[in-house]
Amino acid sequence: MAIITFWNDGKAETSQSMTLAAVATTLAINYNYKILMVNTKHNDKSLERAFEPKNNINNFFTKGKLDLDTGLSGVAKAIMSNKTSPEIITNYTKIILKNLELLTDKNVTEEDFVRYIKYIKEIIKLANRYYDIVLVDLEGSIENQDIKQILELSNVNVVTLVQNINVIDEFIEQKVKNNILKEKNVLVSIGKFDDKSKYTIKNISKYMKQKNIYKIPYNTIFAMSAPEGKVADYFWKFNNVNSSHVNAQFINSVREETEKIINTIKEEQRKIY
Image 1 (cartoon, rainbow, N blue to C red):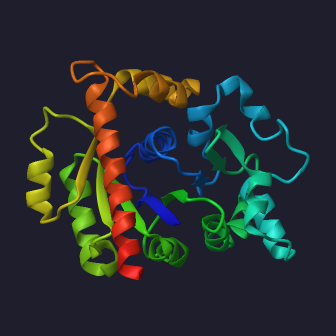
Image 2: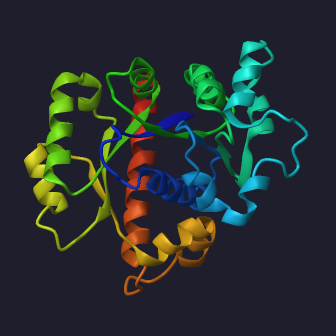
């Protein structure tokens, strides 16, 4: 149904993977969608650790799997062998919840990763034929053609930034050079947001001359839950807290961004039909 890409240029720590994990879990719990998360970053275990305790990481892909090839490299090899169908991807994923899965890689050399990542666009397109929503964790220069092609392929692009004027200025410069960042389907997500900063959403929006800017505030309990593999537990526990609860701002901010993503998908689909 839709491809949602979370992207940053890799020059700042934006907590992008954790934002994606939060949005994905919110989607899985509150919407009746079949969702796949795709990690495209080499040797990055952020998403794995967000949903699986560190001590269990070595068994992350082996439980219930018969194939020796796993993750992105397994799907890439299937594509190289012309043995593909949309449902084959589930053979290489980790099931997080009944409607939430993760596709990533484990212990792949950089040389092999470079070879297999060339198939990432085809893997994402294949996944989009089977899952309702595919969430892609993407990092790197937009001048890279592989990066640019994935952004062009996506129905919604979520650019993750931080409350730093230099980072914001760099994104403004990138928008001038790249029309894809000016599209209506581009949202900006400010990670680790601090309400005490002078760079409020209103001020950032005015400075950037851009709408669709959202915040993901820093939350201590969530920050402790993620490295312990308890992101799903966190959202199950605090999904319906009242407005005075210490986790309410974080939960509501993630939900607001998630709802905007869904509404943007629907708007894009109405244009097609």
